[in-house]
Amino acid sequence: GGATLYPAVWVCAVCAIAVGAFVGWINGTLVSRFGVAPFVA
Image 1: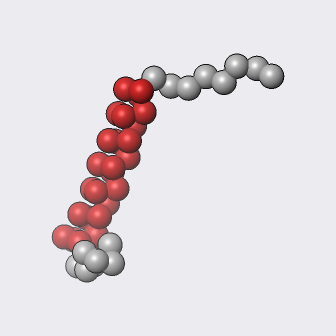
Image 2: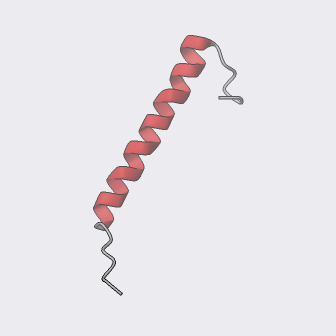
């Protein structure tokens, strides 16, 4: 077996925040521009 390398904790935190912001942006765009109900979006 080889060694398994994991990214640093701060890299995971930044990626998680970036993904959350992107999904929130998509959600906000669906609600505000396309009139999709927030519960559905």
